[in-house]
Length: 114
Image 1: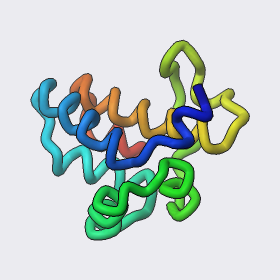
Image 2: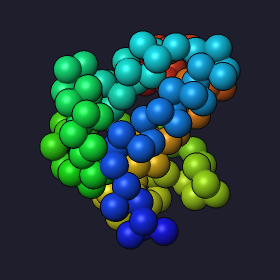
Image 3: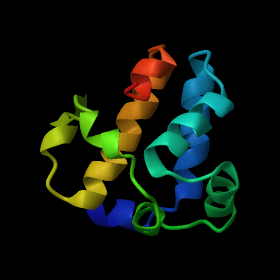
């Protein structure tokens, strides 16, 4: 599974995240806010990664992960995110967990660990 994800581009998963949150009544702007919080990217940098079809590992390597990302806990795909040892997979699951929380209607302050 990991090798397939390592070949995947951020541009491939981003529209799926947009669909997921919009289907649950949240907005693309809220999704972007969550992604910017996690990665440290500015909006134009997120858009550049989408346009460039940056592979997910490179997307996370270039990011400045939020220092509070370690506060993201819980289960994604049956695995506790705080126990994942592979740094790439943990960052990817952090992103999945935040998108899940946003889609489930959690308050933005809680999603952003404020």
